[in-house]
Length: 258
Image 1 (cartoon, rainbow, N blue to C red):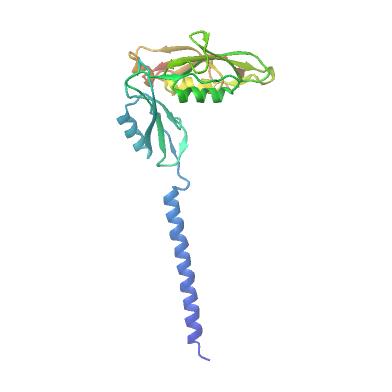
Image 2: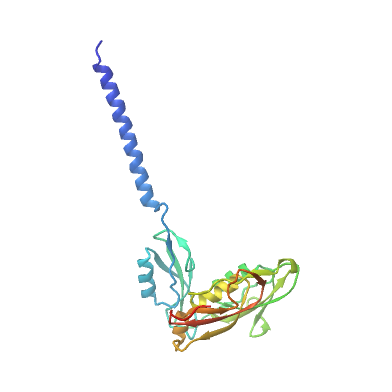
């Protein structure tokens, strides 16, 4: 019996299998590189940095930046980063674009949005999108917790459509249902000033006091200062929404913690 044809068939089958295996492996490697499968990086805090410094910091973390909006904050350096999305500390894939809101060179006005009967989370997002700043959360009894009932500017109700300068502080009156009135104090140690305020609002808490040590001399310093102590501390026990938290900040990372 002539085994030559049989050997030729087996050889070609093996070559075919090998080719398919190599093709699958190559495709897998390509997709892994293309999607950076399984790789994540931590988004750095770019707030208060200049655009050049923010771009450099992002590049060092294998990320990119793009300016999507601007607001006007008179005490902040012109062109400095006011906020970012995703926020600092978020886990993203390398190459992700970080959207930045920067401080504009001149003030501009925006229309006050209608926040009545929307959730606190949505109200916070709408204020941020307009370049307005969330101030104090005043809780009153209501059937729905964190349902916005009133919106105030400088202690008075402000109507939707009212023209305000970007950077204006808006206080909210929000509902509080006794059956859903508890939250937790987050650990703010190491957070920059604006990020700490943001974290407190995310947890339905207020900033009752802000204290800077002697290392903080300018407004720019205050934005770069980090929390080294807080009262109350993050105990892990529930607390009532609207509770005030006092934060202590310094440019010196060697300050004693709680």
